[in-house]
Structures are given as structure tokens and as C-alpha cells.
Amino acid sequence: MNLTAVVLAAGSGQRVGSDIPKQFLSLGGRPMLHRSLAAFEQAGEVDSVIVALPASENAASPELDGFPKLVARVPGGDTRQASLAQALAHLPEATDTVMVHDAARPLLDRRLVRDLLAALDEGCDGVIPATPLEDTIKKVSDQRLVEQEVDRRGIWRVQTPQLFRRAALEDSLTRAIESGMQSTDCSQMLTAAGYRVRVIEGDPLNFKVTRAPDLWLAERVLASRPEEGE
Ligand code: CTP
Ligand code: MG
Image (cartoon, rainbow, N blue to C red; front, top):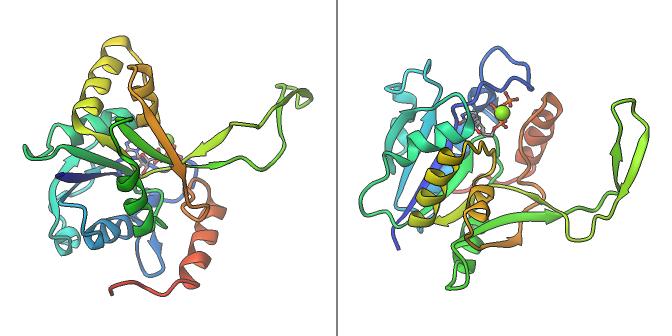
């Protein structure tokens, strides 16, 4: 297997509401993006890394020189899917397996990388981590009245990193573009194209930093963790 990790960091982080995109905010003393890059650097199964950055970002910035597995820094697009397409266009020839990760999930653990790889077998073309929903779920109207109870059995919250066979991911992306589908989740493209995607238990602490309170929470989780390999 030859594995490339694609780190999507080309968003603008509107919902966090900071001056700079959230992936460049300091988290535990280093930019949030560096947390994901460091995790893949330390994961022996990962051969190379590609990062998609905002077009406005200086890709030559020496800040990223400390990650030897980084083989390409590409300008992202207007949507997550467009950023993914830009990154996939730079995959090394030898790559046969791709792990796609959001820079907005800085608490990713090496164990999750291993679990995903262990679950990729003949019966599937992709593996994603997810956590079962534990809260009561309701459909709420625009007027904020409870409209309907939703049965939460079988409903999972999906995370990244997500692991795919390269051919299946590239084929699914081509089909998504052809059919005008825009997806914020890669595995959605695969299932739409008829591929099988396996689900493994994700890590509840691998949450996405979406709004300001998530940053506060991520700081505290990091403070409670011993730093690995630093
Ligand atoms: N992303 C990207 N290119 C885009 C949009 C998003 O690479 N055009 C990346 C983000 O950098 C992030 C991940 O996709 O790591 C998940 O997106 P999200 O959490 O929605 O981040 P943003 O789009 O940056 O935030 P917001 O939606 O609040 O503006
Ligand atoms: Mg977004």
C-alpha cells in the first residue's frame, strides 16, 4: 500500500469569526493546521502528505518546511470539494490509497489512522470514522416548534480522516462533478457512485472546530494530553 494523506485547509472559517482562517489560529502554541500535519508525519503508515491552502496564503511559507512528508502545497477552491479536486490532481503516481482529513479536526489521534487502515478489506472501497448519536433528535420548524421526533437508531455523526482506494475516490469525484453534486463529505460521493463505505467507531474527542467555543474546548483537551514525539 502507498498512502497519501490529503489535508484540507483552504476554508475561510467564517463560523469561528476570527480575523484569520481558523486553521492558522494558535492551538496549544502552534497553528491548528500543524497538529494534523504532525499526526501524519508521525504515522508510519503515511507515505506522503498534500495540503490544500487558501489561494491567498503564501504556499512557500517556511512554516511548513518542518514536515518532510509534505510533497505538495496546492491552492484550494471555493468549496471543500473543489479543494479536494485540486489536491487529488497532485497525488504522486505511486499512491494507491488516500486519507482525506479536515485541518479543522486538530485532535486527530494516530490510533484512528491505524484503525481505519485495519478496516479496509475486500468488502469495501472506503472506511470512515463515526460516532453514534446519543442525544434525542427532533425535527424543528422554521418557527422553532417541534415538528417531528426522529428515530436516532442507526444515525451516526461522521468524522475525518476518511480512507479510500484511490481509483474509487477519483472515479466518485469525476461522477460528482459531472452530475453537479457538491458534497462536504467525501464518503457521500462514494456511496452515490455505488461504492461500499465501511464505518468504524470514531473518537469523540476528534471533533471539528466549527465555532468559537470549539476552540476553547480543543485547547483544554490538548492541555490534558501528553505531547507525542515532540
Ligand atoms: N475547506 C477547504 N476548502 C474550502 C472549504 C473548506 O479546504 N473551500 C476545508 C476547511 O479548511 C476545513 C474543512 O474543509 O478544514 C471543513 O470545512 P469547515 O469546517 O466548513 O471549514 P470552513 O469552510 O473554513 O469554515 P466555515 O464553513 O465556517 O466558513
Ligand atoms: Mg465550510
